Image 1 (tube, rainbow, N blue to C red):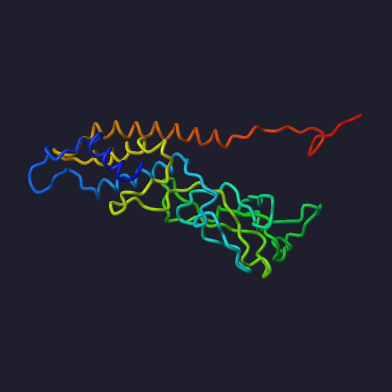
Image 2 (cartoon, helix red, strand yellow):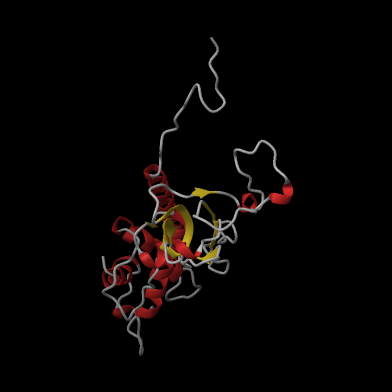
Length: 255
């Protein structure tokens, strides 16, 4: 549904906001601008808590262009987390590692390693990435924008190559009353569900005409249930069975 459709549904069918309820200069209890702000916030909150908005094709959010010698890259502020990263010239995914491993790396063929040689690999083909330089808080705040650190530093020959990300993100475009034909980026299956939070925001105020705290709490509870279901569905789509291997990597056969 478009934003205009959602606005009408929220106002007329959920909030029962009719012109006959209000006397005076204003025709409605809530303006279009206010309700669109609530719908936009509902979409943001649904995306953050359900982790259901996943993307691997939108260049604005999922494409990182390498710069010679640069190892730290600010990611798009809509990104909540990075699932995978793949160099444009490779058929395999980059290895995800923790921040600390960049500075204690050693060649896996070395039995012993001199700590003085840690992190001494010269610039070359990107092998690994980390996104724990800075993390969003639990509310999805962009105050701590996610950054990606790659290893080793790109060479001059690699400058201009790209890394394609698969990410969990929030919506990139805000929903505003000036573009009622816009479609929310959250999947249509969740459009009506996210209106529960918009209704909560509208009804939570203490006002004899507009406020209804008890109804607001009911909408908030229903929203939480929808988020939980959406998150479980997202996790199911990412499920991969665990494989077991014998006779390799720690298992030996004896005759």
